Image 1 (tube, rainbow, N blue to C red):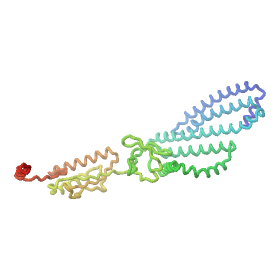
Image 2: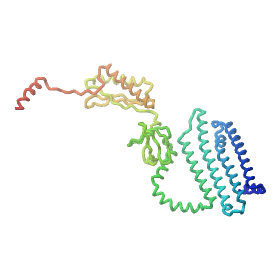
Image 3: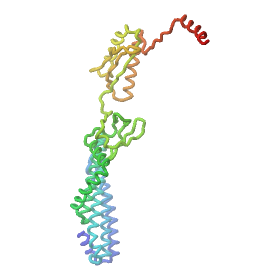
Image 4: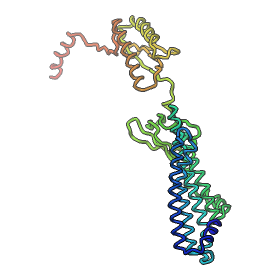
Length: 370
């Protein structure tokens, strides 16, 4: 602010209108040159190569132009109201100018956070990879909170407000606010837990047992998490639920499980041994099954059928691939049972009375009616 006063003192011999006109001309030329130079430097610094340099250059153009305009506007005000001409302007000019400059610096830092994240994404993409979107979003949001909080404290200090008094008031009012915003605070800490522990991230599929909440994580916010259900219906889940519920991260499983009961007729009990042997040979020779552990054995005498139990782990985790492999195994085992002369489905036997007994019952029925 002292530099502005000194600059105005040097031009004080000129008419205010002439001095302001000169400032506007200089401003237009300076902003044009500044814009061209920064754009040239930004084009030369590729975002996937010079991450920080490109982010700084792209972030500072608009705030720097705004700073020049604010400075010229301040000089123009001083042109019409010299120092000592208006006490109100003299006392408010310096704090107001510092507040505006603080807001411009904050604007620059927030833009830099966003541009840095984009550049890191571009850098990872140039190497054929990708950044952790969940971690990137968490760090970006945390940086925004810190920058905005620091800016608010600086503005309050500039305006002469007591930060110590505010903290004391916050301590007294925090208890009342805490009771009124229990759910909000719980959701906030739930979001922090998700960001810190990284139990899931954007793009992964999660399941909350005991509820109908399941689907793909689309967005993790401070209050809630957006999950797109398998039926394409969105769920907005409060983050507090993640602190008290079990979460199944469906995307991080390394194996799927086939657990199936296959039924045969009781008349085919002599064929079970051959079916079991050939079924195990089939699974052993299959390249899509984890060979460390699988089971295909006779399990139980069911109410209406013999029960064979199949338990295996396909190597493919994709749902479509899993279903294709499960279908292949089921049909091949059914083929083996048929080749051995058996039947692959439960059969219920209905015992009918002898024909002559049915006839006698039908003949007695009219007599009983009389």
